[in-house]
Length: 262
Image (cartoon, rainbow, N blue to C red; front, side):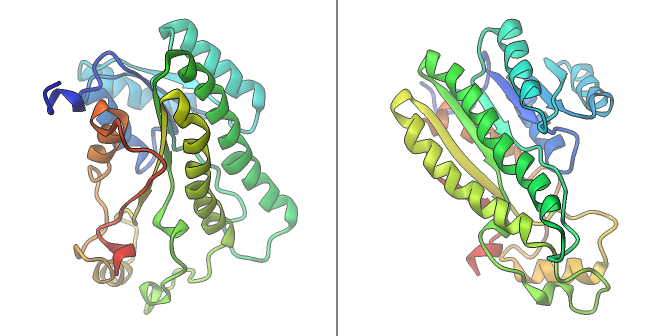
């Protein structure tokens, strides 16, 4: 196969969970632009349909579907819906998360349990259900969206001079760190079936509401001297979803401008 052709997602079916957020929007565009028949799913179907319609207006095959990761039956229904429509799912991107107990360490156990129910238990379930379908075809790529915060501790210097919370909850660090090793575990289990599992750990995304001093501090902490933009994840998503990465599994790839390499 021609090397450039190996990066194409033409004739592949992809599912992206949570496609309307900071990183989700560019991942959705990447899948569509690379030729995949793309499904995007989350609880907020109305908001998701807006971004799906934008992609369809550009000529791409994108469908928004309902998914509530808090409910096991919703995950199974999504799987059945996609299989009934397309017969298979070649790419699963676990991107959707819940934001619970993120306001510090001093939260009740129930708040942490709620976060873990979606960000851990539901992650296990959706990966299992779609992996079972991929195994039938002896092919598939599962991409977990982690964070560089799953690889390092808090850099207190990033917050110096700002009024931002410099003591975020441990739950995000715990979950994203665990996602990296779950990726390795799942890659071991699914490798014999030619189903690959990899993790992408993005760095901080620059938004207009961030204090300029935080942006400056954070950017100086990276090797490329800037925060992530609205296209930095597109290439790695297409690469890991495509046949160009056919011999890559069990990896965690930081896309963080060199933040974790310093």
